[in-house]
Image (cartoon, rainbow, N blue to C red; front, side, top):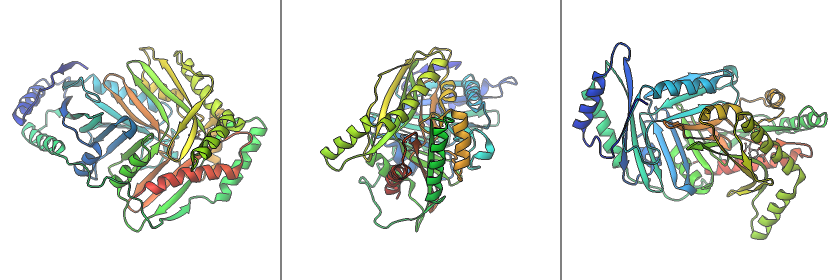
Length: 473
Ligand SMILES: C=C(O[C@H]1C=CC=C(C(=O)O)[C@@H]1O)C(=O)O
């Protein structure tokens, strides 16, 4: 970025904002007809979900991400700039867009706070081609929000990003920004605090018949036996109809309370469609050139008692089938990172990641990122991992298209952000639902390897689907 000014108390009223934006407008030229300005302020303790509820209009694009256990949440809405693209080089095109925006951005204010400065929010579909994606979510989309509100352990930050061009009415813009800024600062906490479970059952319907899932698993097992593939992840989807429109904020609140270890997320396309979920799978976190990623595959339910839970855990840790399923993911990630020039490290055996309703085999993988590598290059290399696709990847993807008669759309695809310093966090959009008014489509999948039993795989998927279904409100 050309200019950055760290100054916690910069821009304290509408007049100061006016002076600053007017000065920025004056620097525009024939060669540079527009520029982006990003202002960060420290804020008192605010719940970003309450801001999403009270301040974000329903017809604006938004991103919400929270990990309750880490006391971290971020809400972003409105678009200062955005970009959509499809095709095999979508990750690098998104990266180029972000770089060109940052070259034209001035960031000022409290830039030493967590989540301060401009952040670009990105989402992708599972497949890279347009014809396989849902028209409501493009193959790749990135936006710099007008507003971003975040909290990390009670340290809260408000960021406002403004696109300044010659036609901008500074007076009007400043009045709108200041009104919103004050509104955000005054946001009260949500009225509800407890998990709200609905007693009646929604009308649910399998998108494709369960027999379709069974026959796909049997066919995949034949491919595995013929050594055409070693693993494939097959998903199942259900459609849900509620007697009234779903309540997005309540559903997100339920998810954060029930699954504090998961990454709760919501993405709105601004046209009435919301993609939400609670995913345990982090694809990448990059901070100061350090990479954290996780191999997550192999699942067992949680026990109702400590003894039962320990029994399931032991069974999972010693199951040959689950260990193979997991090893394939961990080897793939390790190999892909090595190809990129990283020197990743991991422990030789997986540990357990225990969530409220399910436990997984888990291998954290860490590594130093060379300065020449951008997080989007790592994403391009990793997505889709065998935790959601299979090995060999090309054959698995072809078979997934053949077996699954529904569109994966944004299910199992990366969703997250990248900031002005190249730090980033992307999760994998699994255990997720696409909600539109009173209808929702839910997806979940399971890894198939030699030794998989179709009934057990479907039971695992039902467990994952139920977890999400119970949180919808
Ligand atoms: C594909 C999903 O889960 C993946 C992540 C963790 C464990 C998995 C498994 O044990 O099958 C899956 O690979 C999903 O939940 O939709």
